[in-house]
Image 1 (spheres, rainbow, N blue to C red):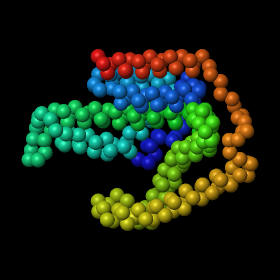
Image 2: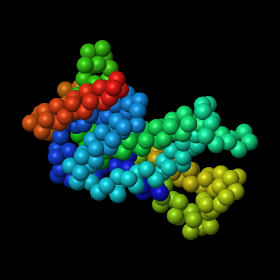
Image 3: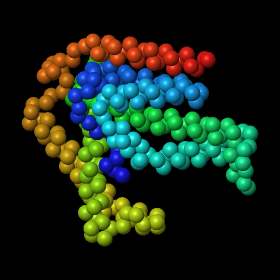
Length: 265
């Protein structure tokens, strides 16, 4: 299951989406997230689905690979669905004792489940189609106006990107430690909650040690390369806005306008 988490992972490809400027993709991700909270009906999600499927198709990333990212979050989605179905007041459809399913609760449960699914898939596309260096540059350009008030923009962008980049690394490390401990007799699948909690100790201790060791190695590597932050720092590859970026921006504006219009129809 740990290998199914797609957030923070980069899927290398030469697609149109991969070639887009990282700043455009960051803005597009933010607009996509906002659009999910603007929607107040079911049918506009069909527009979101078509928009997202078009992006996935153009990115040349296997759909199955992206959908696997939902597996680790299935219990959160199910929990949210159940809470809304049984505990939201409204017109009852079915009841048994203190449990009852209302028409408004069922509608809200489906609504929230769809929102969570699209939110995970949409945000995953950002890291899957953008390398860590490009992501750092994109965040830095977006936050660049805050340089005037003394905010360390480059350092913040670097920290955010390193944090995202370390997610798949730590997950891979966790998987290795779990397999090593299971070979020594550790039980991580027992139904006994107390037993499972105790068995997490030999997993978390080496994981934290490994995380601190990797952080120290990264700091030493950056220091050995004379890294001194973002002041007067140049870039090996300068960002250039291309025709594809302008077309993507226009499509994004049209998408947002359509979603806003659907709210008032």
